[in-house]
Structure formats: structure tokens, C-alpha cells
Image 1 (cartoon, helix red, strand yellow):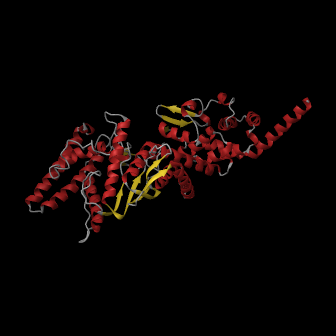
Image 2 (tube, one colour):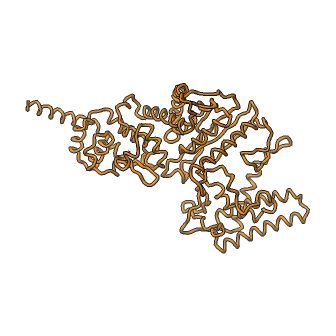
Image 3 (cartoon, helix red, strand yellow):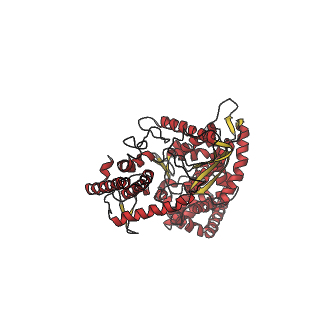
Length: 525
């Protein structure tokens, strides 16, 4: 139960605060305060108690660096702790009150006689507004299965119900927050496919409601920042069925790079802002024509994104956002067999175009045709995900874009499978003996780095000479490209940079080895 997240002392203190706030409401009414005014004051005091919960439960942790208590929702989860800290002082509570009043003093400035904002609790799938009502709609919909919003909300809900539940009976009518109508891909007791189907259906209804309430000349902006293909499939399908026409999309940096979520993960740093209008869509887009239109559009858009410094997962996701500008122009996209193409098929087209563009840019040259699919996959992985592990579905999509069947190569090459995740092994994680028999560029590079690390200069030059890579410019450009994708603290980057610093000497000595071999062969004949 939620009560298990608080010890007896914390419960007593928090219940006392609840009691005093309720008494304050009763006293205001007795002294003749306006009923709605008293309700508003107590509502803000209830928010202060919510803030107090953050730092007075079994999950509140001490931050040594700043000597302060960290709020428990520094992540979108409720992690267990070995120990905890609490602070019930009135000084702390008064600081919370001051923080709330400071916010109120700012947001109240937008209230005028002619303009006063209204906050309503409604379902996004059924809005109580007439058709063509809004000039603009701005929404940040739920990110598929990424955050269990309602479950996390219960942490506060069960306390707020005790403070102000009687003042808002319609909002606190259930024991905990309602779950069944939430637009999130929860599996609950069903299947993943069922959860996805429910999410798509409800998201489509919400987008259709936006279309209905938006004026003909109006504008809608939808923010999305989910990195998996499944999440984007749902958005594409829902937008295609909504009637809204996507006219633009841009990535905007919205996430802190130092946040906990970004550490040791392939988390996104930006959100995609999708701009929609109520324009008339074209009936049918035929796939071959759409492909050409997509390629031309993406090349221009991706070049601009690249020049603006968008990289890694953000670049791929930005490519998807840009592609929606093309897909969203049509009511249906069909192939010549009469099949309608949905999000999964459309995304495979996008990923192929984005992958080809990225490889060309990373290698800064037109020699990408000389590189095998496995080496290409390695370069793309390091550029996209660096040294992080990634959920299998996304890794599979990246592999498909370069023509690799993951099931045939994982745990046999540098691609390692760990439960539902995949990772790419660097040179330090590979068996040096197994690399000697390979002629794959990335394997030869890893072997060379390991021999260089062991100061086996002669062994390294023999490998580079026998494989023929030692005098190939492609080999060194791949090494340089991988180095540039990695952070300065990366062990692999340090190996690469050390190896590359001796390139001139290495190529000179390999030439001498090759010339010596050639002379010896000539003597034999």
C-alpha cells in the first residue's frame, strides 16, 4: 500500500499537517471568508503538503554534494533505498509556502479583466468545446509505455484526497487515480499488441478531437520525444487517421544532459515539435512517388539538421519527424498491389534514407560503398548509441537499415545480446585469438588496437600487411570516424587516437614490409 512508503513518525507528522490545513479551511469559513477564496487557499496549502511528501518518506535521499534532500521523482520511477532522510521543520514548510506564493504572484499577472485562463479536467478523447473553437492547440501527449503517469500520481493522490477530497468530490471519487482510460500502452493483464492497439485507438481519437475543435485557419503543435520505433509507429498511424496535415517538424533541445535518465543510456536530448494545420489532404499517395518525394525532402532537411549539430538518436528521431511532413499529406499511402502502408512500413523507408545520409556524413567521403554491412553497422551504432546498450527492437531496426540479420550475427561478432538488450563490444571486450582469422575491417581494426595496446608493434604491422588494410585510406578513415563519435572519456577513443597518431610511421613501415616480401618472391622465381 502507499502507506508503506512512510514510517510511523512520518505518518503522524504528515497527518498532523493535513489536520491543521483542514482546520484552517473551517476557520476561514467561520470568520466569513468567501467560500471560493477559502477553497483556493486550502488547495494551495494542499500542494505544499504534496511538496512535503517528496522529502518525508522512505524514498527521500540525502545528496552529499549539496547537503540537501533530493525529491524522490528525480526519475520517472520509485526506486528503493538503503537509507533515507526526513525534514519536518516548520521552517522547511514555510519555505515551501514561499515558493508557491512566488509562483502564484507571477502567473497571476496574466489575469486581466478581458483575459483569464481556465483550467479544466477533461478527457482528450472527448472535449466539451464546439467545433472550430480554438485558434491554437498545444499538446504533449503521453510517450507510449515510457512513463506510468497514473501510478506515479497515486503517491500524491492518496494524500491530496485526505486534504481536499471533500472540496473536489468529482476529482477524488475513486480510491486511487483512474487507470482504464489513460492513454498509455500498459500491458496490465493483456498482451503487448493489445496495449499498443488501445494506445493507437485513443491517441487517434484525441488527435481527431484536436482537428474538430481547431479553427480552419488554426495551428496545432504536438510535442513528442520517444525514442523507440513502436512509439513513433503509433504517432504516425494516429496522425494519418486524424485529418490533421503536418506542415513542419523541428527538434528542440528540451532535456538536461546531466539528468539521471541520460546517464549510461541512449536517451534523447531533444523533443520533436510537430506542427499541424487543418488543410485538405490528398486522397492517395502511391509508394514509388512518395519514396522519391521523401528522399528529396529528407536530403534537404537532414543536411540542415546535420549542420545545426543534431546527432545520434536525436538525428534519427528528427528524420522521422521530418518524414511525417510527407506522409501526413495523404489520407492513404498505397503500394501497387492495393495494400495500405502503415507506420511500421513507412518507418523502414525513413530509417534507410537517414542511415545512408548519416554514413556518408560520418565518413566525410564517398567511399562508404567500400565498407561491409557489419562495419557500417558498427560505425552507425557508435555514432547513434555510443557505448550504451539498446533494446532489441531498436537495434534490429538499425541492423535492417544496413542489411544485417541480427539473429545470425549476435554473440558471434562484436554484437552481444543481453536479455532484451543488445550492445556493441569495443576492442577491450573481444577475444584477441578469435580476431586473427577474420578479414572484416572492424575486426582487423580491433585486433590492431589490441596489439598496439600490448606494444606488439611487429605483430600489428604483420596483421595490417597480410589483410591489406594497412595501406588502405578507408581503414584509417573508419578508425577516425569512430573516434569522433565517442566521448573524450571513452577507453576505445583513447586507443583509436593513440593508434592513429602513428599512422604515418605505420604505413611507411608496412610499405617496407610489402616491398621486402615482393623482392623475396621475385628471388624465388
